[in-house]
Structures are given as C-alpha cells and as structure tokens.
Length: 193
Image (cartoon, rainbow, N blue to C red; front, side, top):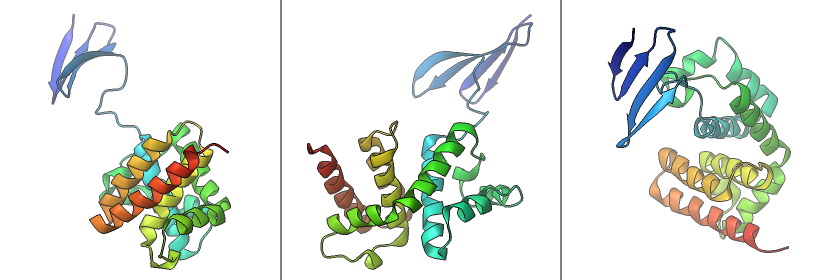
C-alpha cells in the first residue's frame, strides 16, 4: 500500500512503513528526497542566521548593550515568537549549528569591534563612521567578522549576502557604498602578507 499526496510542487509518497519519500520539483529539476525533511518543514538557514546576527549587532550598537544581553533578549521564549510577524527571517528559532554560528558571530563582533570599525573607516574614504547608516555598519561588521574569523564562510559569499542584506534595508546609494567598502576590504584580504 502506497499513499500519494501532492502539495504545491512536491509529491509526497509514503510506503506501508510510513517512510516518506518526496518527489520534488524545484527550479525545473525533479529529484527524490528520501526521508529528508520536506520544504514545508523549515529549518533556519545560514542566511537567516546571518540576517539575525546583523539585527543583533545593530541592536547592540543602537542600545549600547552587550552581545550576551542582545542574545538573551532575542532567545527569550516569550519574545522570539512575537518576531515572526515582523519578518520571515524569524519563522524558525535558531538551534544547533545556526545558534552556535549566531552566538559566535555576535560575540565575535563585540570582541573585535575596534578592528572591524577600523576596516570600515579605512575603506570609507571621506566618511566618518557616525555618518554611515547604523544598519549598514552592522551588516559590514558581520561580513568582515565572518571573512576574518569564520572558516566555513567564503569571503565572496559573505560579501554577496551583505550587499543583498543592505539592499533590503537601505537605498541603492548605500548599497553601492557598502559594496565599495567590502570590495576594498576583500582586495586587501587577498594580498599576500
């Protein structure tokens, strides 16, 4: 006996042992998903954790609080669920690998803030740090921290996501400005010591 169901672009097939196999159609490709979670069973992605890290760093800068205070407030069981109404990025609460990443980045940015702000100042020629939008600063700090201290984060991926996040929160002039700063930073990282 086999049960078949169709949900959106996924065809779910269950055998008599209730073992789920999913035939998925995504971006024009069909593939089988044997016993793995379907796209309906969401888990936090690195991109979402990165965006939340940017929110927390912004919060730290704006309210002059520590990484520990920002993380404690965010992860409060009574508070976190209320964030779902603000943006999809909070649809799932970070756990496991993504919580570890989030904690590492937010605490790392706090510990290395002076160094990160030094890079931003170095590559934002003619601009003081105080003139740059706070969300843009938070995004750049997270990106630079990842590039310098997180081994599994390719620099180009961190920069691309930082630019896209900036586009989500700021106008195109700020996006170009952030792209320029991060481009200069990336070129400096590529130079041999």
